[in-house]
Image 1 (cartoon, rainbow, N blue to C red):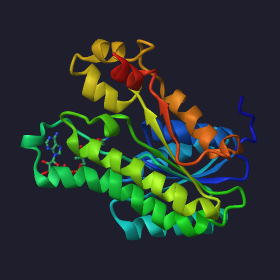
Image 2 (cartoon, rainbow, N blue to C red):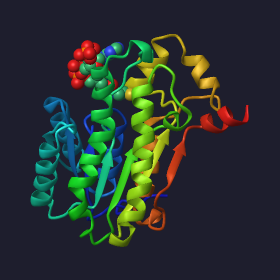
Image 3 (cartoon, helix red, strand yellow):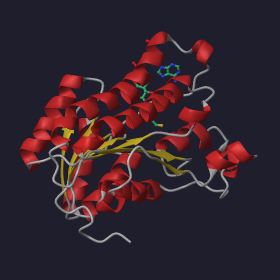
Image 4 (tube, rainbow, N blue to C red):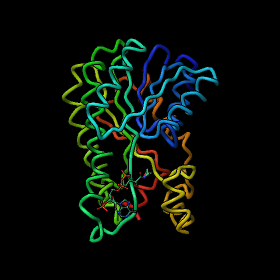
Amino acid sequence: MFTNDTLKGRVALITGGGSGIGLEIATAYAKLGASLMLIGRNEERVQAAAQAITEAGGIAVARKTDVRNYDEVKATVEATVEKFGSLDILVNNAAGNFVCPTAELSPRGWSTVIDIDLNGTFHGCHAAYPHLRQSKHGGSIISIITMLGVTGWPQAAHAAAAKGGILSLSRTLAVEWGGDGIRVNTISPGPIGDTEGVQRMYIEGGRGELEAKKTALGRFGKKEDIANAAVYLASSLGSYVTGENLIVDGGRWLKYVAA
Ligand code: COA
């Protein structure tokens, strides 16, 4: 479906690009011709990811950046444009989460997740905007959320509120920035079996089989499923799609509603 030049000439900045879904998206983008800036809090991890992509023939650099710090994000966006000449795609993928009953969640625990997920996404969008509007391909922002941000997420109120906020922010920006040629979309992955989050939150807790059965397809997804959606939305194939929340969850959401 995708050809080697699907993302040729595009520059993408991926937050949390050193591991998990972020790295899978980075790897797919690089194979399809994009130049990448990978950012994360762990310098070693993002550098290793960029090196692996470069060794495989892609174009990638990395920079330690904490999405909670607007000045750092802005400096990294500017360094990306200086290095590659433009910024065409922003993927807001960095996230933090842990399981905790809300009554036991400290205010700092709440703020920490809101800061990474929701404020971090705002920081990325705001800092990238002047460059995305100049993209000759039309800018594209993709944020990774979850339908649990819509349904509610018992034991993860902080992450649910943050993801719901990102959905709202994205729809607002799709309308505000549509005239600048910037498309703003979200992807809602379901349970993706080969991620640290699902391993930690479901599989290690003995809930793997139960969670897989909650999907219409009866199985976990793969990181590749999310990367394919992220390629579609970033490329010209998705050029008339904005304000959309692309649900890639094996029917988990629908089964929740229909059951
Ligand atoms: N249960 C309850 N509270 C927790 C917690 C847990 N499992 N983990 C962290 N917190 C609280 C801390 O107690 C602290 O609050 P306090 O000062 O009132 O005690 C607050 O959250 C900040 O914790 P800290 O460890 O200083 O934050 P951090 O910035 O180092 O870590 C997190 C960020 C909390 C998101 C951490 O879980 C993390 O880095 N996770 C790895 C990445 C990740 O979650 N990826 C998402 C996969 S879906």
